Length: 111
Ligand SMILES: [Zn+2]
Image 1 (cartoon, rainbow, N blue to C red):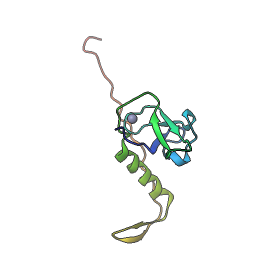
Image 2 (cartoon, helix red, strand yellow):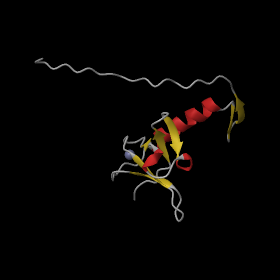
Image 3 (cartoon, rainbow, N blue to C red):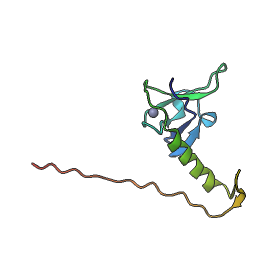
């Protein structure tokens, strides 16, 4: 059974995108956290909404990566959080880590 995907990466802002905030179809501008494949938002009336890969894939959607990204967004956009074990934790000035890109330059031995 394929995983049900409810979070994708919104390519226009580089933020996590929940299926409930997406536009239906390919207009969602989402890609998969697991494989970077283009996502299709399925928002029908009979089933719970979900993303599917535009091109069939056996990818599971990268849920852990998606939740990590979403949690960081929520922390930055909020000033407190409630954790079941610790109760309410207040904080301020949370800053989203900048994405670091590692560029690898390949050299051919014979160039
Ligand atoms: Zn994928």
